Length: 296
Length: 247
Image (cartoon, each protein chain N blue to C red):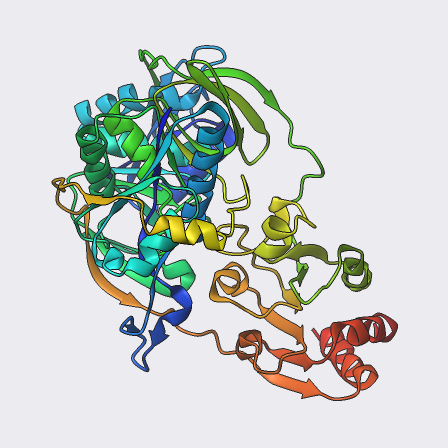
C-alpha cells in the first residue's frame, strides 16, 4: 500500500491536508506538532508541543522521525509556518522541497510548479529519495474518503533558540479574498489614495471585494498586504474580476487568471491586461467609473 | 556586526519571450537582481548603519554577474562587498542553500544572514529556511521588522492570522517579507563608489538536484472573449454594465 506523510500544526489545516494527501497515496500518516490526532488521517503521530514553543523548533526531531519510519513522500500545507517547517525538515533530510501547483502523476512522482513569476510552469519529476512537497492551494483535489483516525503519541525535544514573546492579532480588518465571488482590483492608474473611492463605489454596486496590485499595497501603502493579488500575494478564483488601472503584468495575472470572467478598464489600449480580458474598456478611469456606477 | 545579504541574479521576467510552442526564449533577457532580494540588502544596510558593521552580498551563480553593470547596481544599494559562488543559477533551493552554507563558512562566519521573500525566477521561498537548518542556526521566514538588542534580534513575523514577536539569538538566518522596507534608489555618488567596492569569488560544492525538470513551458492561455470597446466614457460604461449584468 502506498503511503504519504503529512506534517501539520493545526487541526483544521491538518485535516484538509490529510484529505489532499490522499490524492498522493492510499494511506495517509500524519505527524501532528501540537495539534492532536487527525480524523482524516489513517494514523497520526502526535507530538506534544511545549507551551509557547514555536512549531518550527520541532523540525529536526520530525525529520528524524520521518527518516526512522521510512517516509518517501512528505507533504506540507502552504501557510507561513508549514513552509518553514517544510524547508527545515527537507534540509535535515538532505533534499529540496518543491512547491506543488499540480500533480501530474504519483508513480513516478511528477508535479508542476510556477517559474519566472508565473510566466512559465515547470514540470518536475522528483528524483530525491524523499519527496518533500508544499501543496499550494488547489494543487490537488481533496478526497472525501474517511481516515482511520488512529493515534500514536511520540516524544520529541524541540531545538532551543527561538523565544516566542507574544502573538498579536493582525491590525486592521481580516479579509479572505479567495472566497469572494466578485473582486475589483485597483492599480497604478489611480493617481491618489482618495481616488480609490471611485473603485469602492463600483465594488459596492457589484457586491465585490476590493483588491489591488502590488504597487498599491507595498509601493504606496494605500491598501493592506492582504488585499494584493499576484504571485507573492493572494490568488483568487472569483466569478468576475474587474481590473481597473492595472496594466496586467504577469506577476499580477498569475493571481487572477483563474477568474471565470476578467473585465478590464485601462487608458492604454496596448496594456497586456486586454489580452487576458473577456471584456475591456479603453478609457480614462476617472470618467468611466462614475459613468459605470450610474449605469449599474 | 557582520551581515550577509543573499541576492540572486536572474533573467528579467519582462524580457523573456514566449515562443509559439510555449517554450521560453531567454536570449534577450537582461540579468537582474530580484526585487525581493533588494529588501534583504536594504534591511542589512539599515541594521549595519544602526549598530555598526559591514554588509556582504552573497550570490550563487556567476553567469549573471559577468557584466559590471549589475554588480555596480547591487553594490550601490548598500552592500560593502559582493561575493559570488560559481554554480548553476537554476539550482534548486537545497543546492543553493548548501552552496551558501559552505560559502558562509569560507567567509569565516557572520552574525546575521538576511534573504528576501523569494527569488524572482523560482520563488520557492525556501533557500533561507534550508540555509538556517544547514548552518544549525535559529531561522525564521516572513520577518516584517527587525530590532537589534545586544546578542539577539527581536523580530515581528507576519503569519496568516497574526503577528508573532520572536526573540532570535544571533547568529541567525532570517527571510523577510516583501513589504519590510522600500529598497533605496542609488544616487550618483553611490553608483560611483560602487565601482570601487570589492567583488570576489568563493568556490563551494553543490549536491545533486532533488528533481529533474521535464519541461518548462508558458501556461496554456485561458480562452478569453477579448472584446474591447473604446470611445465615449458614458457609452462604454453602459456597454460594460450590460456585460456585467448578463453574467
